[in-house]
Amino acid sequence: MTENRPVKPQAGRHNLDPHLDRYAARTAGMTASEIRALFAVASRPEVVSLAGGMPNLAALPLDTLSAQVGEIIAEEGLVALQYGSAHGVPALRDQICEVMALEGIKAHPDDVVVTVGSQMGLDMVTRLFCDPGDIVIAEGPSYVGALGSFSAYQAKVVHVAMDDQGLVPEGLREALKQAEKAGQRVKFLYTIPNFHNPAGVTLAVERRAEIVEICREYGVLIVEDNPYGLLGFDGQTYPALRSIDPDNVVYLGSFSKTFASGLRVGWVLAPHAVREKLVLAAESATLCPPTFNQMIVSRYLATHDWKGQIKKFRENYRERRDAMLSALNQHLPPGCSWTNPDGGFYVWVTVPEGVDTKAMLPRAVTARVAYASGTGFYADGFGSRQMRLSYCYPTPERIREGVRRLAAVLESEMDLGRTFGSVKARTIPGSETPSPDTV
Image (cartoon, rainbow, N blue to C red):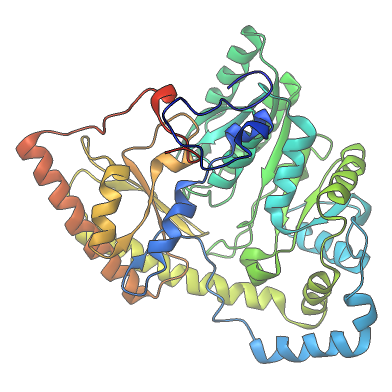
């Protein structure tokens, strides 16, 4: 890549995109995630998909919601279908503060900015804080959508290890110390403290204040992404990092996992000065989030037992989690290990040495089961021995069948390794590899 534009295709290769040399240099960091590439095959009915993170919405009261949508149109249609504020509907911002109070957060509605899903919030925060070459600290592994945003804005990700208790404070301190020694600018720590995507672990309560203190010591912002926090299987909620240090934590929330993902309603709670810039960023991105969708969420929160509805979701996901763990214990070969999530959607599996989960994936799809290979959740090429299994959407019966199929593929892969030795995929230096725009 040159200083001002992406590199032109090499001689002898046909350019499929006549605009290729016009794009901004930062577009070189925009690549399709491995997860998105899976959807086309994983959505086939004969394939048991343990790959995606789609919420199971079967428990929603659709008849009630249908009536409420009609009421909104009949009673407030001229407002619901009109442009609104980039800040978000005031009534919904009040209700969001009530939701966050369950995790110990004291917030003013003025500091809440409603977004089109929390992904928009993450994108705006990255746009506001990251210049090309800046450092973002993130758990390893980390959410694939976050890695995509960081790459798109040309930020460099430094991963910090986790254990069964979440992010390791000593690893965070060492990463910040090394960045400071190298003269690198660390803009923020990005963390998913509760029921982590993809690892399934939860940050221990006793570590939370320590991590907040480390970031304060090094002058590093914290971006706390918490879409799963109310989905603990025992009903327990944990103190948000934001509740410990309101002045240094930007909090991302969403109704996608606790209500309806298709409405794409999320929010950012930010320190007051950051809030002002977020509103400006939202105006430039979407002008305003859809008022109608916000009013649907607001009416639902005002008239429905939403806490009881979340309890139903928790029970459904706990049943599926139990089916997943039972099947893994029954079917996976020796040498495999996995996390034991207390909430959320995901189990993180580690397979024996010599098995490459990315290379194995096409053979798994042929056997009619799909998963997300671990490499998609790292910015540095790691994760080839890991996979993310999602239990949120399939029925328990489909989960058990999917794990049975996966185990058979894994056994076959291990047999091949024992017979022929492990074979690593051949890689070609980047300058020799055609981009998606050239053949």
